[in-house]
Image (cartoon, rainbow, N blue to C red):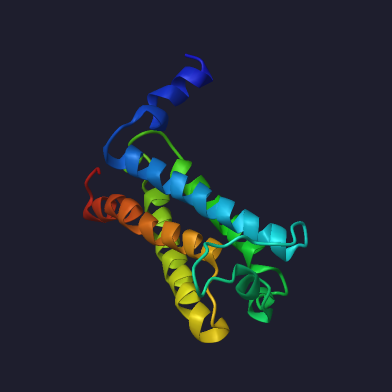
Length: 166
């Protein structure tokens, strides 16, 4: 059997259960990474303006251009976010369709990773207004994607910890 046909038996065609939830995490990781890519482009000076919804309180440039956005290792936080979401994507895509029985560690690692991501993104999102009196729409998209990944990733880990297949 060719490599391509083996891949088609696994994750890509699944419509429900563990494979579908993993695809959901992968899609949300791509959404968050795309959003962070836009912010990173601004932080690196590749683009001069970050568009925002025409609503009061949104000023992505103020938040993304703040000193806090470079506080960790002096690296723009959106670049770190890109790496983090790439790791999440990779963890979601490891293995074939129902991997919980054959490879339990990716399910556990993915649940831990998305939980940490959600906690960090939530803290950053909730701190925007008090610290900057502004909201970063792009950052909120990434935070929302992180939060939405948790209920998709955790069921497989729970099933694995219970010793059953998801």
